[in-house]
Image (cartoon, rainbow, N blue to C red; front, side):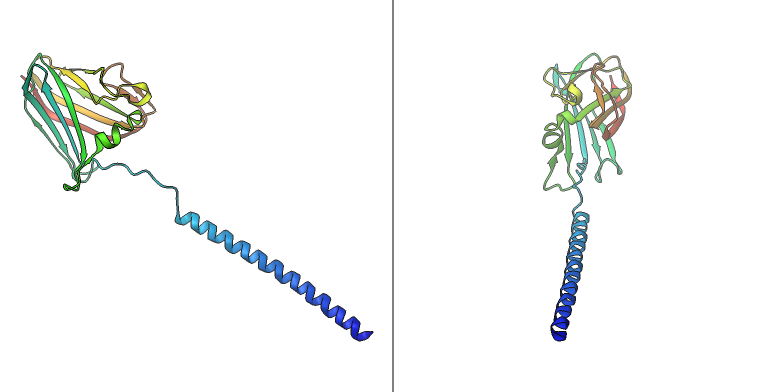
Length: 209
């Protein structure tokens, strides 16, 4: 009898130890799994959309009555628009004329693989962009009927026609806004609130003769 009681007591003790050990083991596995999951989350953060690098912006104005009358404005920023840049203006506007604007926006950091930012990124996402313009030359501007759709139901500002006034000199500004809170093209040059400027370029010394 004493031997049987001892065996039963031993079995009960072993069983209790087994239960305790099992609970500890399961808890340890749970903690390891939780830690591993957290580490994986840290190693794989949510992807961030990279801002496209814009190194070259070119505005080509062509007289609608004389294709030989051309004004070309170039902005070159080898490290992108936040870095150093060079602006040039070649040609002179003729007073009292109408000019069509052709835009080129590229990333030429790798000359062997030029990235057409305007056609590959901005135009396909036209509803997230808006071009604003300004000038101190008294020039007028309209967004053409063929212009593309921009943010908030506006016209993007890719296809525009400019008219020159009297002779003089001044500045011409072009701004590209990404995801503006609001955009308005009712004054043609355009206005926005919020958003982020992909670039803000002012060409100085522009002449009308």
